[in-house]
Image (cartoon, rainbow, N blue to C red; front, side, top):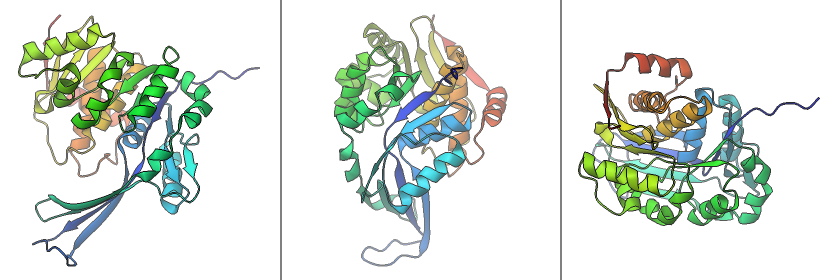
Length: 318
């Protein structure tokens, strides 16, 4: 008897070990500063994968790690969080991507070191070796860290799975602008959307114009994040904006990552687009209410609680 394959979403991208030093007061250059040091596992795609798993999405995550202590710890952590990193590329003698920052007493970054050389080891041969994993995924979530690899993936596997893009930054959005027509879903913020559609978004008329531009390219679902103004959505049939009112903000880091995870949850559970947006916003709302990039209590039940308790403002254009 053949075992039925469980549907899954696939995330592809970088995992990062974050080290942040926070000085107590009066940061002094070229000197030791009293303070505290925090470490965490990060990276946009890794964060998305963990958030997806936390709310019950069957998640595979293909990343790149060194065979160092940090990489081993990340692999163990993925098992605890219940997402599958077993298809990742492990580089012998490599250094797992690491970001080290120093922040002053105001929380402003004064210096940082980024070790991401290992991501150059992603190759088309490696992608080809994962072809069955990619083809069998319901959705594949990508960021724009390696535009050349993104282009190879979407052109090679177009028609086999549905691609979801998180552009990550306006600068990186520019590098994948020519590829967005291949994506099923895009989730830019306002500034990334401006880069990709080629005009400024000042008001609702511009927002809807951008939505139509993306729809006309063949993109099926567009979500544009508007910070305190909420989320614009368009799937060709339904178009509007959803906003959560009276949101407590402690740290916005990770909000976009959890939002993408919420979209994936909606897709895998075949949820209506407005309800998908609300679920994704609720995940972001939970995230920004804590200092952590991922809320330690993030789970489906907590998200549902937020969905039911948030006071929503909704605008429908169609």
